[in-house]
Amino acid sequence: MNHEVLSTRSIDRVETAFADVDTTVIPKRRYEREELISRIGEARGLFVHSENTFDDVVIDRAPNLEAIAKPGSGIDNIDLDAATEAGVVVLHTPGMNAVAVAEFTVGAILARLRRLPEAQAHLAEGGWRSEDWWGTELRGKTVGIVGLGAAGMETATRLDPFCEEFLVYDPYVDDDRVAAIDGESASLEEVLSASDLVSIHVRLTPETRGMIGAEELATLGPDAYLVNTSRGPVVEREALVEALESGTIAGAVLDVFHEEPPDADDPILDQDTAFTTPHLAGATTETRTQMLNVAAENLIAVLDGRDVPTEYVANPSVL
Image (cartoon, rainbow, N blue to C red; front, side):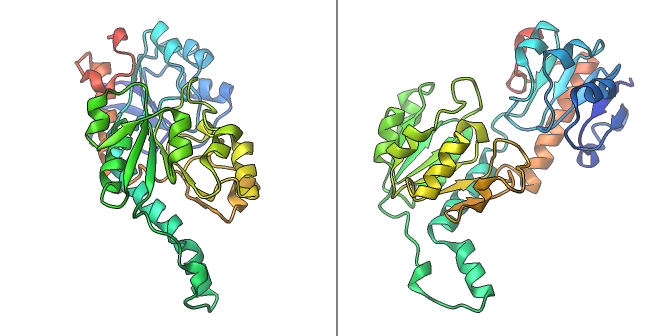
């Protein structure tokens, strides 16, 4: 059975899933709302990414829309309430990239603490060994985990051989989950004040937006590092720039930004103590291929009227 599907991203890795589907592919970029609505037209299904916002207006003006599929866990660019009210199924792949995020986070932390990017640049400029590039160790450090979901848990598991102890802030998990990493539950303030390094693994929600601001960064302190591989707006941008420039914190690892991609003149990119990467944490060949195919197959299943595992449905009440 053919379906009218619009994909705002390449389908090269999911050609098999879409083999018998009438699919239109448009370039992966940000579209103005009216152009996006025009492109959607009569489509029954959307296969999307993070660059565009699918708000109540867009959803309301897509008369045939039945399902939106987004590979990955974050769906903060899709108005879930509007989709649910319109009877549109929202599909994603929560937790599927947790191992990729965890491996990246550990590697990035080690690169930041051991000053590997600076050392590489120093060598390329003709320099050699110097105590300026000695860096510091994870051994004996206290690591704070903000958000002990799939990515937070996998990250803690991989950091465990390095660090001394874990402090965990996550009001939505039980003590058994925290105990599984030999961690200790604490308030956000306690995590920030007592940790040598804090790694953030939360979804972007009204509750988490701006949860790390100037006060929280000051609590973290001048010898500690902040790691954010979740969503940029979880940390207040201006407060973070000021904290890095003033030495309020020792440094940061940032894989996510308030606008993506960030402007070339974004001051966060000029901070010597920030190790910045272009939202790569969850992007490995293995993980991306799996997420793309599961999201695509579930999209076609919904349009076919077949069941899909509820773990992949953000608004199962629609089903």
